[in-house]
Image (tube, rainbow, N blue to C red; front, side, top):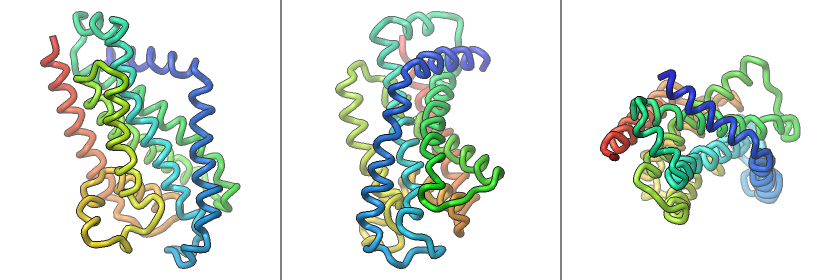
Length: 246
């Protein structure tokens, strides 16, 4: 997997040079957190743990930033395919699994960094964290990022168009976000929506983050197990597709 680490380092270096991308990742969460959170606060007067609505959606906004950043990391595959770099590493003595792992590792790291940028806003929503809690939150974000980045890599494995990739992303990302319980308690949704919530991997990421951030009751083992299982299955599929590519 050393080759994968080298590939990840290259992608990280390229991404970190685009500081506008990191700064721009803060704008959307701020709008959702403070404008939406403030506007809807009176509509959700009774929430678990006695928190207000802005505090309640804070873990969901963290998950949102990680989700958007993770799945769009698949564009690095299309970019490298467009400019020939992907072909070079495909013919090099590097295993296809290492390529997938490296791309997923770099995308996960960038997504976690973007989530951490939003995390520093916690004093403005009236939350207090211990050092251990911050470490657990970052670890949870990385776990979520790794699983969703693997999905982005899988989608991009057979894509050659930025437009096509963007269309599929929009088709997947928004439903995954809105059906995750990031903005509302999932126990109050209509029965016909619950199957979609259950099969949504982001649901378990939001539940995990909400449990750690707000110290609420959560199914930690179930959440972690499903997130890791999803990541393993999707990575296996992505690796298979890359091995079939000539």
